Length: 473
Figure 1 (tube, rainbow, N blue to C red):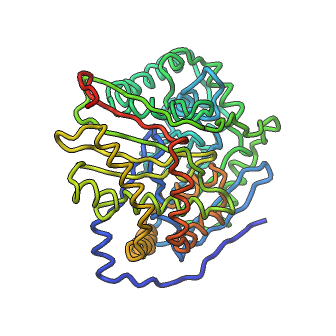
Figure 2: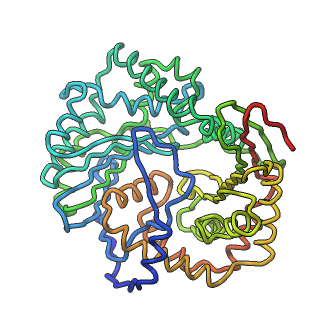
């Protein structure tokens, strides 16, 4: 049965003043073959009023989402698997990302590298990315090439053919990737340790790319076991956005994906959970390569929950009000008024299958110690809660969110990603569509209530990153 979800077309007036505000608060995003989840939930780039979304399910259990946009003859084809680094077996950290690399090797019908070469020859681009809760593969091509993309993507869902040489070479590739992106970057190593301190029992505490000593031991058996377990149509979501119709997508999906049998042994997605955190945790990271010391703090908080996103919406707005830009509370207090910091930020990672984090970052100014910066952060948070939310600031923020929904309509890549991330993280199409409305409905009192509930010391981890020779003042 096809389930079509429409939203009444609406014209939202965007004044010149709104455009000016948006120019000062631009939003950017990036994507690559290995992507860590962004610290900030991109809630300000959500479904616009005129989006037309159709959903249905193939007989083998594969979920299909079609997002129509007929303004240009292009299409984004994505397959999302409900399997990421948090689903890896203990001792095999990095195998989800490792397998992502290996899926660009040969299949029964394609030579190694032929899929990407074919996409490029047809004027398109392709890539893949791994996160905690999902692994996704995509191609962006002319709309009349959609069938070819499905033919190749469905082939590697079941027909991957690996050699010992593939394992050896790609293992070296991911180790070098870790060298470049983590081991050579003190900030990445610091974040890795902070994350591990926040999540003692949950798999979110391991790096997506993996711990080096476990990456070095990843084998063909490890990769194929993960592949055979999770790469199946009943564990996948097909998202197609652009110049397509639901009937055309359905016909092609049934032709290419519908013939693949479901994995009847697909495991229930159960994970070890965090025990109640009842004590604040601290760490100090020292490295001679550190150019700029800073303080970072994370709190364990709820993520967006299907059918009950109100608390997450309050947390998202809280992050924006506290540290979302040049007019935020922390920026005004620590950078402009007290001149103690050169940068402040607050971030909420709301799209997550399990509990997530709310983060603060304070980079102190010259001659300001990390201890003083942390104390100023604490004092400012207390003052924010005591004073309450500035209603005018909240309304300006909501106006920016409404306007940014219009601009998001021009990005078929972003729209497809938004649905894929949400659906692989326990949300529904209806949840994605409801999110902008819920953001607009949050009150100042609800934001303060969320701050009091979530920003408690006993669920926090505070980290200091400093040069090797620095000592506390």
